[in-house]
Length: 286
Image (tube, rainbow, N blue to C red; front, top):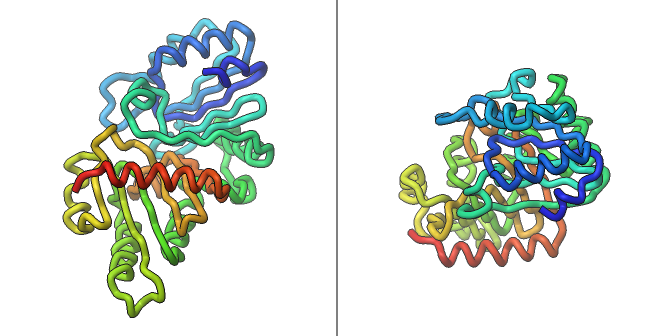
């Protein structure tokens, strides 16, 4: 909230859902200070019980400096990315702008003032807003955008993993990703295939949808996190590359949605995440 209150000129957001009352109030404060706010949000959510897009449109309808768009001009299945761009900083997060995201879910946020990444995100946002095609040259090397280059990137990173793969996500249902992970698990078991032991572990949400996953990958590999709802979406490769994203590991997310990730190589952040992952792993059930 402190960062939001400090915004002076503009705020651009892509999100799947927006219901959190305190954030709505903060946005109204910004609008009354003539901050320009542009929002791209999904208007036909999966199993939608209420049209929160319409509610947001009506809530801010008095403000000429507020604009809301859906993804209809983007030709994507869902706008599922979760980013915020302010005057000089940005967020990329796993969380929707909902009460549960901030109160009862396991979520992660990445905050930065990196100017080059900010500029790339701004280009991506504006092209999505205007319905223009995003080119590979628009995407910073530390960013990945679905449905453009994300399947190639994630499959290559997983296939090239040499020491460890730690995944924390809602679920894993994409056939291509599962095929690679199953192969990596067998590499873990067959010492003749490797000079070192491969540490492959998943923490997923505590739902029936993950029962089949746990049945195949035994407790040394896959567990359910039941302390909070596991909505986060993170992968750590070889303790060198950390991926934070909006994307679920499903074919629809990889191939049809707008999703945005960031690749993090900062050792301090990676070490902190590894510590948090280990704590969640120990608290998870099997």
